[in-house]
Image 1 (cartoon, rainbow, N blue to C red):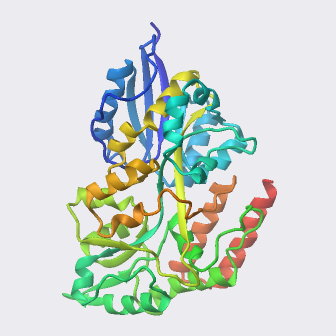
Image 2: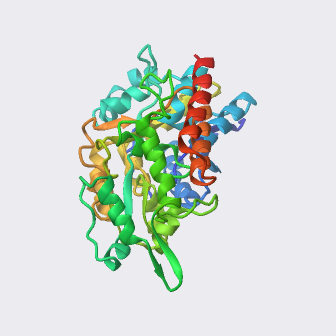
Image 3: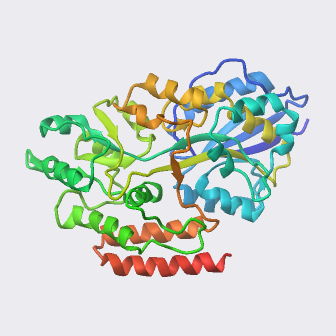
Length: 427
């Protein structure tokens, strides 16, 4: 029998173990199928994921081969688009909110409404357990559904508790503001054994994390309908200026370096604080590091939580649409998520979020990853169809400001003009 290959692309960096046998997935008559599962990441979780997917083979007879694609969401979307455009057979792809509009506009994704209609009990179990706002991310203007919510992330401040203790500080409260933040930075910037230890790492190279700071000052990269850039607003300039000042005026933050990870710096104590979602927990577990707590980002004019959600999509170019939809649904159920999302991301299924996060136990105050997870407290990250182009502009501006020390207002004015050209040209 002819061997068939189904390629599935994922963009997670998480640990996995074996699952129970209670998945709901149709038995396939033709079992001579190999699924290629591609991940966005460096491959550190390949062995554990391969072991997890052995269960899928046992239940369906379908083999799964995994591969990893490195890059952020913008780079991932570009590479995926190139693969599809080049004729590569790509059947499923995990897409974060950043890439959803782009792929729907391009007509790459396949609706799963027929699968939902054919499997109402399974679909209801998933949808009843996820936020309506997350579900809306994966619908087009006509209301067609393209994926189930899989996982999400917010952005919080990760803080090395050893560094706090050395400075004689308690963890900040959730209502800390800019002035209190700067006070912490002053006390946490020290020289130890001839080596400078910094208070905080600025969100360099992090589109998602950087906009979380803007949200806390009533700013964002663009307006709500993605028709105009607002990255150069006074509220936005204030935040970008702070990042530059943390490095060059106060000396509280190191100059960002391309190959230096602030997550590693949190672990080794070179920096005391950095803003991320839950994904550093994979690094913490790998390094047996537990001296870390989290808190909301400091408020400027408000405290607005940012949110980003992803889902597993079936792509139209698949020669095996039904198999691809079955795999995507299998991975969206509690049994798979409960094992796969033990670290890294927050399960989109409310029944799992608190359980998996509290079981891991780190960081301290980890309730911030799941508190109110069944309510819609999150403002989505700015994700227009032109996300790849806009994210490149944003990250370039951050680099110019934080590395090359360019004038903040001038840099953001230029970025806004460039973004507006992109947004206008692609309407």
